[in-house]
Image (cartoon, rainbow, N blue to C red; front, side, top):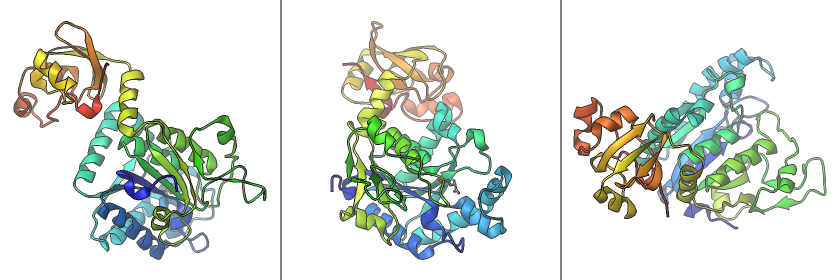
Length: 372
Ligand code: GLU
């Protein structure tokens, strides 16, 4: 076993439709859900944060509405998702409720993971839920997402979520126990791959286009997910969910494929902030703040002497020393207009100055990459 699941600090678990919904009757597999929820409650009790990304809305809604077999028309899938999502959310509430764990539902679209403002909102809500001990239960917002603006599969959604919450673990539970050199159902010589340290073209070519009956993602979307997860510094496992208690089994060393990142989520995020975001403006800080930042602190408005540029909340900005040299880059928690109003003031005055209670920090230390 290359990775100890129980040692991961924040784990996103993706649960596919084919595990949750019986392919013949279209009914929810409640006993299985109860068992996997117990596994997640155990991980939580062991100190890990747990986030669920679950499919199943469309499959359950199709059963509830008596719609025919797939493929459904787009508007039928959306109607099915609308009805099925309620059933799904209720089932999670019951399953986690039995473990004394609260759940909260979040429905996301691609835009929520791509547009900076919306990304930041979703990230804040998720981190607040986790702080409160809640297990967020996430699905794509299939009722409003049309084909052009859909993920369409929860493998990639789960990887974006893992990056968004700086998870260090992502487990894709599916009906296959890992990556093979070829499709094992078609090629008896297919080799099992226990560990992947780099997504080489050779590995990417192993995906083929295998798809199971009722879930959308095949190996292709799982390897796409791996690319996103590894870039975010997150370990990823493709593991079988077919048995009851699949996460307990995984923690005890069941066979799966682990994908290993080079960096940890914090470093990966800082690298992303330092390298790939275009700064939209700058904030200049005083000497005291510059020293505090060097000591690993967040940037508070009180230490800011000037702001410039045209940035929105969540945009990258340069952080400058009093002499104008660049100290680092970070994501601003305020727009340029609001930052200009609160600069030089104590965080306690933010609400009076802006009319709302925002974050205490102008740039949180997790969102700050210092130059070295
Ligand atoms: N979001 C879809 C649903 O809940 C499923 C997508 C997938 O199977 O990956 O039905």
